Image (cartoon, rainbow, N blue to C red; front, side, top):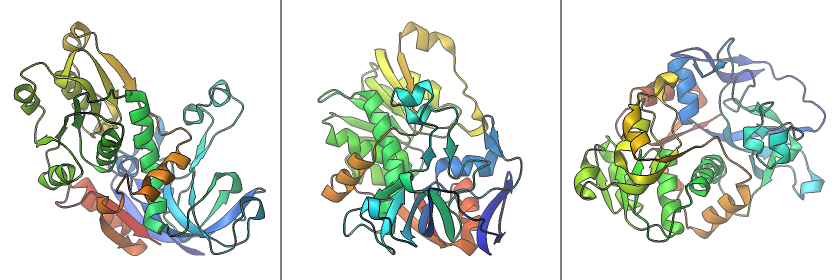
Length: 338
């Protein structure tokens, strides 16, 4: 028996005892070193669910994690005590989407930390061995945690296909947005205009390479002389994110929507998007991104450590959720350390 953070319903997070069940064949027991508080975790907290994935009974969130092995895994060349990351996505492997290589689209997925599957905001967790990610020497628990959100950002940039020196407008400078910003720099995008209502996030965007920053999408009109950008990447939690992305886009431009809107709905006038003949892509989690994510962190091309602004023990996990839900100043990414 050990403690875990449970979400019981919207705005109801509690630390309570969790009885650790016996693992299934093919699983290994992990001692959790750190777990990230993700925007999707926050939607479960604020809204009680995301779309059809609702909190029906209390569950343990947390899918961005690093931990220490409690046993040797010879087939991976790993010994007990090794720090590893975990791919939270247990796809079925045999549906049409899995066979196409799109495991992130599997409709039969068992995803760690999405109801009804318990996640990593607890001291120990059974995980399938095939989802264990071996890490280079010198990686920290923070690095391990941040590989999963970096994988989401990689999927977004893969779908965006930024062109060399192309102007990009980025809406939202939370964790995912700031990771996307860095990847846009790596891929050779040109001028990057970053928008976020919170000053400390704009400051971080400028530090990480944004050409210009602003508090509202209306500022992009002057910056682009009313033309807009050929590529707009939206990574907000706003119901107006889709609308704002349309407003920022050039005629014939491309939109990539990464954010999950509060309330699970968009407010969008149809005519501007239709008349601009915009191409729109939605991002669903990530594909097989871990090798690239590890290489980007190991090489220093992506700075993940600067994004972690807060650390909490498990006992203070409910307070971490509350602070993020209230947009407390200065916060970007929080880690919980069970």
